[in-house]
Image 1 (cartoon, rainbow, N blue to C red):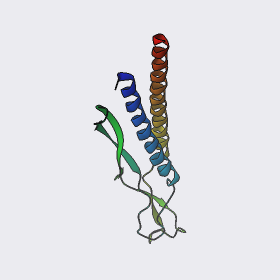
Image 2: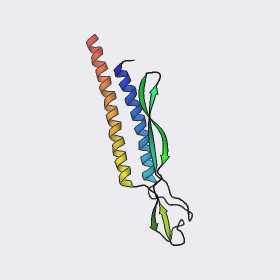
Image 3: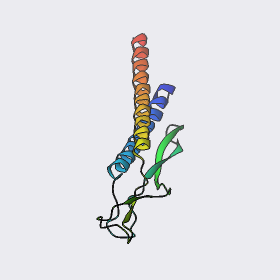
Image 4: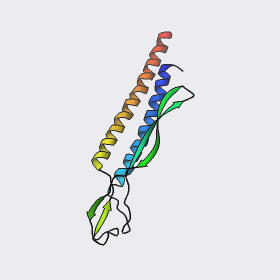
Length: 136
């Protein structure tokens, strides 16, 4: 495979990894206000994506993959909500460890990285077409 094809393979893997990251961010944002439905229960726990470098044996290039999703083990918040079914005896519920501002920043970074990889694919295609035009 030539370098332009390899760059397309690498950029495609980056786009796939960022798409998975966007799904995790969307899940975190969707559950940012979820609380436990039973006293003493845990609310939603924020998830993070783990990226890994993998050698593609077919092409011989190193690609990025969204290897795994892990839970963020930071502390939950606490809010006074005495009417909630998940409230303890003092009226407090545990709230998710999701910070919407961080999630929005992660979403923007994933979108920008996705766009950068898309631009690499577009540029590779353009260069390949120009090379073919020169050979005609």
